[in-house]
Length: 98
Image 1 (cartoon, helix red, strand yellow):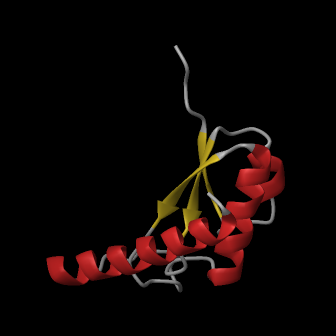
Image 2 (tube, one colour):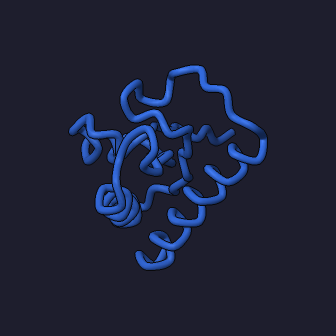
Image 3 (cartoon, one colour):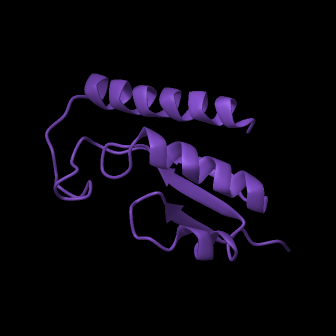
């Protein structure tokens, strides 16, 4: 059996390079609870260099509380927020050759 060891990255903790040496996949913050376009791009490239699979980690727009605030949002708003973040993540993956 193969187990995927996964971690959230690109959230500004400062230890992403060390963590990338330990995991097989990484959820990269998509910018709404943490991260920004440059950190997303850099995280994708770093993961690629270490052979680590990447996944998008979208969230509600709650940077102040790191995405942990309960928010009243409609299904359409959630769909739009996720589509926007995953679309941007996909574009940065494509630009990185991932």
